[in-house]
Length: 208
Image (cartoon, rainbow, N blue to C red):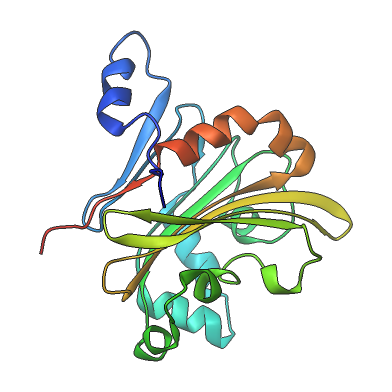
């Protein structure tokens, strides 16, 4: 793609964090090769809450997600529960949801040479939003390919902005996703923190 997702680099940020109180918390799905940093003040959502909330998804998509999920985590700029994080309803503070899951054989077969087409509607309904609502940038790093999307649209009449990075692992059998969203007013106010999160995101193919 010409530029890396990784901004400062995890090593550099770890060195900086050694001076004084840490300003970031470092999230690592080590077994799957996904890493990023969040503000240290942002609160995690308990994994048990996420699992309970997802078990309430009764549609086919929910079943597939639960069956193929490998890793997940959620955080927010202030205390929030799993239902708030997983809902499409805009929140007044940034919420982050990230996961790694295997793709079913039928999903793998449907991926063509352009990952944009395969991933564009994974989180944001890009193909049904008005022109100009979504800015999509192709990404490529360490054999991973995918897209970064910034979407601005209203939910229940409330403007929301969502930032999504969706990446396919080498071999295109696994998908990695990071979602950050809140009301557009919140997103504008937190632009610097959100940009730093995206800038810290990196991928490394895990060893067999």
